[in-house]
Length: 475
Image 1: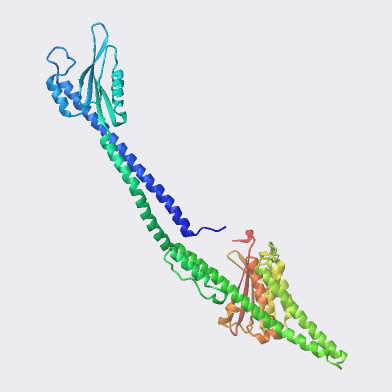
Image 2 (image 1 turned 90 degrees about the horizontal axis):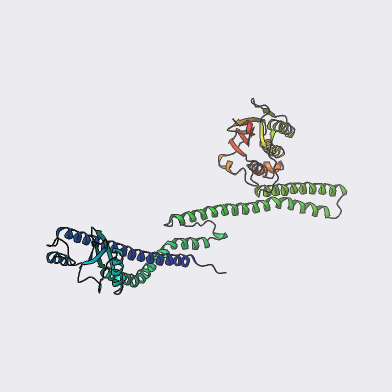
């Protein structure tokens, strides 16, 4: 299934929103104009009714009783107003009957004939008036009714003026709406193209970054904060990929280099042993050397597998509270047995933290401390190796300090790299593979711990292992 392009999708969504907005806006304008015009017409009719009512109060017939026709002066005043109106008068006759009659009917009132008779109510008159107006199109007129004493005033106003305006406004919107929509769509397309241009550039630059060009990065800023954030995220991802790629290349090169020497030795020993006229003792010596190299290679492969499993979070790690002092004491005794001469003293300084508890895997912690201790033994000719318990910020720690050759400042950041050795010849002489500190760091991180290094060339080094404390130990 082909996915739509972002530009087409955004343009389509904008088109639908634009048409709905413009059509809704035009409808609201027409509706608002109609409501305002109708309100204005009603207000005008109310004002006319007010004028008619005031005139009726000012004029009376010369006779003692009003007739069915208004006085001439009142008629002139009413006709001068120019409105369409009907005035009916309802009086009570002497025999108790109600007698409604037309008091005045303007010539412009849209009614053919208004007939009244005894017993006819004001509402019946209004209905008769509306029926006569309906003959000319009731929708064209608005009729306003007001009761004033014995008179009922009906004022009719034509909707034609504002209906013509509404029709013109509607036709204008009908013809102008597509033009406005097309113009807005063109501008929207340009805006979408400009907005997506940085994203397209990021895509092109990202596609140009391959295994042979991992040093390249996507240019920032892009001009849009969101796209710049995406570019920076891609750059951070490429940084991780580049580091992993370089680490893989370095690991491959180091592993090949480390395995080349024992394999070459093995080949030489086997070829030497297979030569003719070798004495049984010589063959036995060659096979013994071969076995040692095989053991060394096996340990190296196991260490490499341990590191790979640890980095992939596939290594089983226990998490329990244990006595860190007891583990440190055990490692201290093993370290004392590892020292080649009596010129190195090994000690444990509890520093008032007897029974210090930590959370982690005691077997793995023992392995970490043994790696740190064996590294200290390897680089210390004489002096002391001291294990010290420590506690800070809710962490329990063991410091392993030696008085060896120390580590140059420029090499401290590399001591945890695979196969790295500060003094390669000395490590090889003692059987070191350069993986001990890497394993120690991986195992510490798997237990939510860390290893810190302090060193001065010629004054020794201190490796500190820090692990979480049990909750009750945090203070």
